[in-house]
Structure formats: C-alpha cells, structure tokens
Length: 136
Image (cartoon, rainbow, N blue to C red; front, top):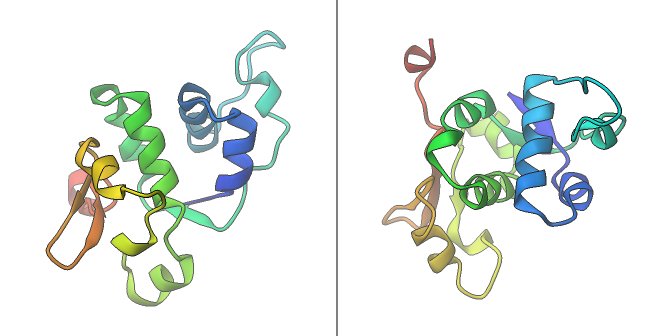
C-alpha cells in the first residue's frame, strides 16, 4: 500500500502526464537518480507522502506498458479522491461516481481502459481489486 500527496505530485509534474507517471514510478519503485542529469533528479528531494492511497501501485506500474500515459495518470488522479479512512474501515477501493471531477466524468471513464462504472455508480479501478494470489 502506498500513500502519496496528489496535489504535490500534480504540481511537481506541472500538469504533464508523462511527468506524473515518471514521479509515481519513482515513488513506488523507490528510484534514486543516477546523476544530476537524470530526469527524476529534480523530484528526488521532494517528499510526496500524503493522504491519497493506492493498494497495488506496483501491479499498475507492471502493466502500465499496455496503456497510455494519460490513462495511467487519470487512474492515479481518481484513486487520490478515495478516502483512506473508508478503506481502513471497510476495505472499499471504489470511488463514488459523484465524486469524479469535471462536467462529464462519463467520457473520461469510458475512454480509460483502467476504469469502469457499475450499476451502483461506483468507479472500479482495474488493478486495485487484484487478489493477493494473482500478484505472486
């Protein structure tokens, strides 16, 4: 399980989806820059610990080559809107559709292969509901 600060991550990435995924990968894989010319160097001194959470960030990154940077960044952003307290109490990894930002969240979710909405208007995250047996 990973706790991260979405607003700080988004600010550091300057709104660029490639930088968002790069920073997230650095956090999850605990990457250290090779030298000062490494693309993650400027992010390496920032503490991205926060209240946003992801249960299986490693599984998302393992399969990220199948998806666009935009899809992965949207997945990370929507996952940040979930309540860590609710997860601690009920183990719920879904997000209520009404909490999704924007004027038309349906378009965002329909165009993202990592997200789906069920009949109860809950947004499901593809790699958050993975069984422990499937990971190892």
